[in-house]
Picture 1 (spheres, rainbow, N blue to C red):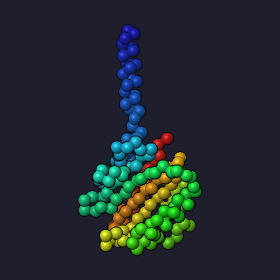
Picture 2 (picture 1 turned 180 degrees about the horizontal axis):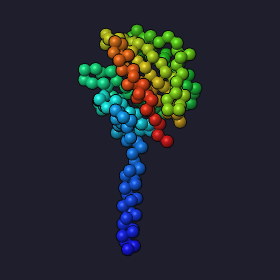
Picture 3 (picture 1 turned 90 degrees about the horizontal axis):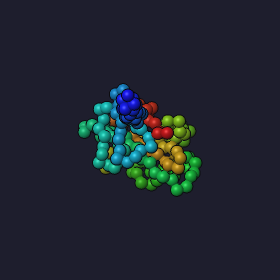
Picture 4 (picture 1 turned 90 degrees about the vertical axis):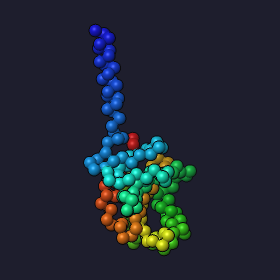
Length: 178
């Protein structure tokens, strides 16, 4: 009898451990988890029809082979802690120096404050010319626990608005792991 009870308890514990792992693999309706070979400290979900891009080394996905509008998430450990506004200001200066026809959307920084899963963030939108095409970008930048995160949405200028709803859904479902 003791062996049977022990076996049942062991099976229940094993099953509960397997079922307990669903928090990171749960995906909202119509979405799928964007995965990485690296251990990520966040969950990011993309629309189910989008394609994960494993070729870049970054956590990224694009709409389709006919529409390369894409999102990516990168992160870097910080050597020194500064205010978020300082990082963003320095980053905008780099963009101005390195991108052809860089133009920041009017209203920044006043309209650039946002929140990413409960963390203060900055939102910048800009256009630039790459390889003869005009692109539009949205970036959400935040600092959490000594790490800076960059969420980037990139699309040809004429396709940008057509994916904004999906991008907002991605951002709404983004979560940092505890």
